[in-house]
Length: 551
Image (cartoon, rainbow, N blue to C red; front, side, top):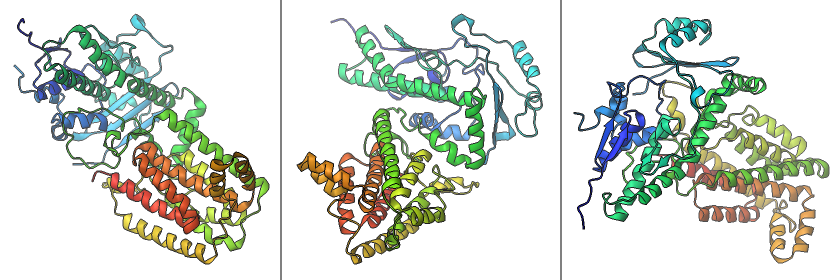
């Protein structure tokens, strides 16, 4: 047998993707060389890179997170290689325009980082994509000198004090094929996004290490082995890379008033809803499903929303989640319509049932990400429940809460201060526990004392039993749901079951835990009543969310 050929990775380009990959290879003692055509490493030839949690987690794994906090030098990744022969308040302004937009951020050392985006008359492809010079840069600045970047400052005021600027087209492609034989493209050469480039590098390392274990080394890997490795990387990263590029395009189209109606609605929402409630839930969603280096530990960092691979269960696929969400919305809409045409308002004797919905939706209305004046105002629901009844109001509130769609950020809101991250802490949990326990006790006692009139033999539980034993009896049970009590019971149970499903969807609980909770909801209707069951469910639900936070 001939001698094994030495294995070496040739990295072409000393940018974010190349240097991140080099640091990863160094961690696993894999030989590499970095080729860079410019006279300096990581030259300022691109627009910028903003480090987000998905990229920072990977940088933390290779030992670059702490230096990033202490340094601002662009060559940090390069300096971290062995062989090289505090939270402060910041300001941000986003300006909507007609075919243009501006983003201005204040940073360390009193520096301002700014972006002016202008829509091209048409989409450019291939060789028609323009390459800009310094003269183009200056001509652009002159043309848009009078664009306001905030209420008082024009673009000319910033540009004349610039240290560095670059005029560049915004590429939006994600290639269908990223590799050929022994060559694979990572980063901007395959897809846009610096943080995404780090994820792609991490997936390449994961595939290489797995191949090294399988083949007892990398020296004798054949071309077909590399094809399998590269195909795995692309299969893991392609869909996510496309999604991030598409969402970036949609946000930029919104900012540049590509669709005037959508932009008008967005600006209206910004004036009515706190920015944290409007933007942060949607901003976090693309980040939590990110890749990491499987064979390197993730250093401990406090975070309010765990990454998907840090949760007890694998989150449900978006397609399935969307289908269940639509079914739930349709069921609640149908319940609301059915209640409006078949049942009277709730009698005064049933007022004890109002404690749970008023309390739960008031709490939900104050959560960061869910903030809604209607949800957060108990008097609105109290009047609605009294005048219209539970079986009419609860479905409407459930649909409103669904539309607000707080997804993962479950801590109550707070005013923005220098300690704005306090909103993610659990100081409120003792008060929530006491509130839920009080609501549970009051409603359970009322349910037992009243002889449990709310639950009859023809409730949803009876219908579910009939569904198993006799389809014809099941149809008769469904017909009986037109009575006010039975319909309301069905609405309670459906709302509670969807809350359990939502936890399982996001991976906060395992399937078996979800099933046990569902059984508990069903039994709770009989033993303690729907209101107490709801309060008990929310007690457990908040405990799960608080326990999932990495403190």
